[in-house]
Amino acid sequence: MSTAAHGHDDHHAPFLAHHFEDHGHQFDSGKLGIWAFLGQELLFFSGLFCAYVIYRGNHPEIFLQGSHFLDVKWGAVNTCVLIFSSLTAAWSVRCAQLNNQKGLILTIALTIACAFGFMGIKYVEYSHKIHDGLLPGKYFNPSAQALEKAGLKVPAVNIDGSIVAEPAPAASEGGEVVQDTREPVNRRLHIFFSVYFMMTGLHGIHVVAGILVYAWLLKRALRGDFNSDYYGPIDFTALYWHLVDLVWIYLFPMLYLIH
Image 1 (cartoon, helix red, strand yellow):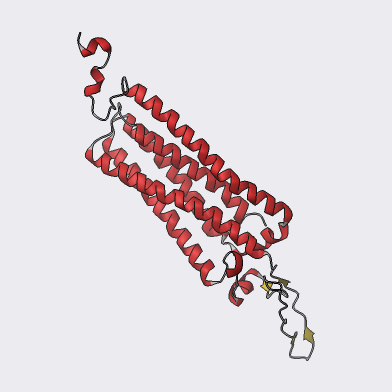
Image 2 (cartoon, helix red, strand yellow):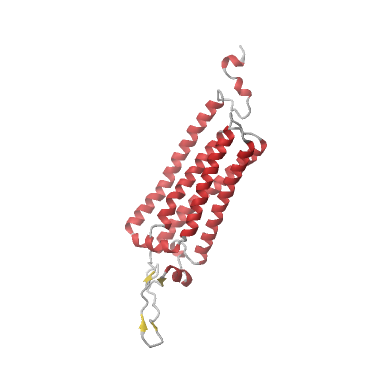
C-alpha cells in the first residue's frame, strides 16, 4: 500500500517532523505549545506584579517619590518602539502566509532593530541610575545631583538607621535664614529601585531572548525556509513578542506614571 493511501505523502515536505501527519497538524501542535509556554510566563511575571502591589500598598510614599527619578520621556519612547515592533512582528507572519519573502525579511529586520533600540534606551537609563547611585538594597546612595533634579534633599536617616547631620540652613543676602523645605529622601527608597531593577531587568532579559530568536529566524528567512505552508516559527515567536510588549505596557505606567 502506498504512503499516499495513509495520508503521509506530506512527510516528504521540508521541515515537517516525522511524527506529524501534515503541516496543519504540526502548526496546531506548535500553537498549543507556545500558548502553554506563554501561560507559564504570565505566572512568572505575576509573582513580580504581586510583589509590586504588596510593596506599593504598604509603602505608597516611596513609589511616588521613586517615580521622580525616572525619565518619563524615555519610558514613553520605549513604549512606542515596542508597540511598533508588535506591528512589524504581526506583519512578518502575514508576509510568510503570502509567500512575500522580501516583506518577511524586512519586517523581521525591523523587529530586531526596534528591540535593539529598546535595549539601547534601557542602557542609557541604567547608566544614569548607576552613575547617580540609584541602586537597590545596600547599594542605594543617591548623588546630590540626582537629589537636586528630583527636588529632594539628603535624608535625615540612612538606610542602616544611622543619623545624618543635616546641613545648616542657608542665609540670604539680607541675613535672613532660608529653611530648606524640600522633602528628604525616604530611607526605604531602595525598595522602589529593587522592584524597578527586578521587573525591568527581567523584562530586558526577555527582550534579549527575543532578539536571539528573531536573529535565528532572519537567518532562516534569508535562506528561504518559510512559506505559506510552513511559517509556524514566525507565528510562535510573534506571539512571544506580543507578550513581551504587553508586559512593558503595564510596567510603564506602574513605574513611570504613578506620580
